[in-house]
Image 1 (spheres, rainbow, N blue to C red):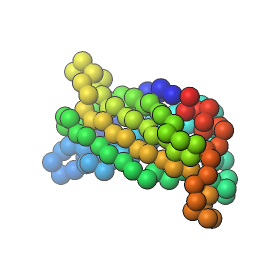
Image 2 (tube, rainbow, N blue to C red):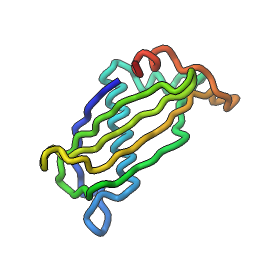
Image 3 (cartoon, one colour):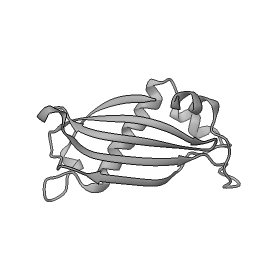
Image 4 (cartoon, rainbow, N blue to C red):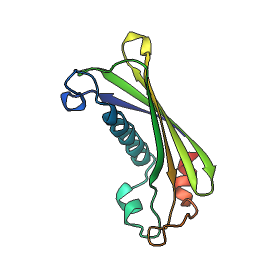
Length: 133
């Protein structure tokens, strides 16, 4: 799955030094993830109301390559990879729409499908498998 999400850096995204606060980069990535699900016709509300599955993030990394400032226009490029029947990974490239689309940051989130009652791994729902491919 390839998807691009447009995002503006807001004042609330930045820290006292005027650059994006490190944790907010993952929030931006998660917004892009949620938007890609919605664009594919997957209702997050319905997915979350299914008491048989949950898709927690079990690992995340961010590499900061250049600062991001309030007012910057960003493109968050997502790609996905199914790692097993119960696990997938999302890769994010965050680029500036100005400055020849320079890469500003790269992030990864790894998600595992579990049964929330037993906390044991379970197969990804077919709708997620289709979205990933």
